[in-house]
Length: 252
Length: 252
Image 1 (tube, rainbow over the protein chains, first blue to last red):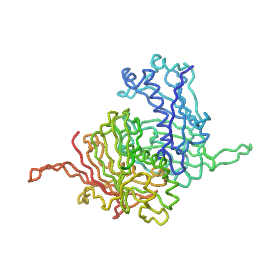
Image 2: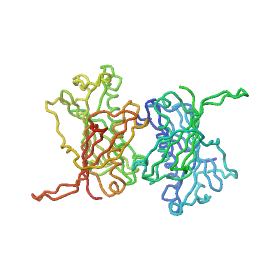
Image 3: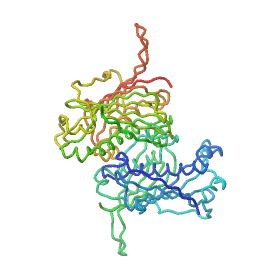
Image 4: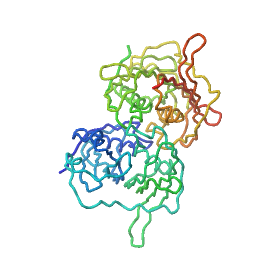
């Protein structure tokens, strides 16, 4: 079984929004830091991967939220590089309360890219061996992200401080663009339950992106099934899509 | 003598920019967190101050940089609420390397405000007593911030995630607006040495602010004195100034 790595984290005031709960950028930053620590411990840090002429990219997240961590809370951050196939590695993260109850579960899909050619590489077995990841045949499927048919949008410019020390626009920044467009009222009156996000292309410093959103209100279908409130999201530059997401919400 | 509070911090990859060094927002967040921890320890946390119908605001920072903390570095964060007069409290922060050498020194000027009337209050002695702060008569002066005579600017919208769990636009966010306008080339070719920043008014969610900058190249005066490269900054909404700053730089 794949090795688990565990660390603890105290949620700081600046990692939380007005709702007094941790933001997605903060949760993902803490999660990725834990995976980097595990990689260093297993001698698979960025320098070693760089020796193969490769670097990790994240192509999608699937996130389930039971309860968002609160200001001042002591949480446990657990991660496990569970499975991989020819091109993708599936890493799980759990944010737990101090009793070990699951608060947030994050499934992240990693791939290896040659930073010069920008081409995705197959995953060498020896890179993942120390993690004890299980090799699987299939490619995992996540909830479908429907295209936006009737949305609105706001523009965002990629700023110098959106690029982190890994030389990329920090994945976490996309969450700010995706959610800010929903506005203060929506974001203080709803609780997130589930997120699926896919990164299609990399945005670069100086780009002007548009964050599009469509709100699909909750409704009861003819079958009696209740479809929850969902928001569909697209980050675009002109007609080209760079990132797509679907969020499921409940009333606060 | 005023009590010192000390904690340690490991600099995370997401707290650093492409220069591999810690950003101002990250440094200030870590510093303010240390001061909040000290206040809790001394029973002067936000709830106690709130009991007086007051809350802390920061009116200015004066920062001296010897060397910015690096990705992965273990730093010590030391803080001391050193002095106060009728309206202002002077708190110092030091970021030290693991040998105790000073990397960054931050002097912050705090004031107490009634959050409802937005009026500044005089500082009750019993609020500062546990810190052991020394009462002084004089008001401290910091380097003058010259007005911009010939600048350029970029617009920034105040986003939902610019407001932190303290219900204010996080002070640290101003640094992103102030510096982003300098652009990638400037920010990768220069090292900051000194910062003086003054907050005049509070911006609010949804505001569209303009970040103005003027670059004064280094020059040798007739007296032989060398004036270093300086940048002058103003955050404005229309003609009203919300924040002013001066940064001193050297070539990297």
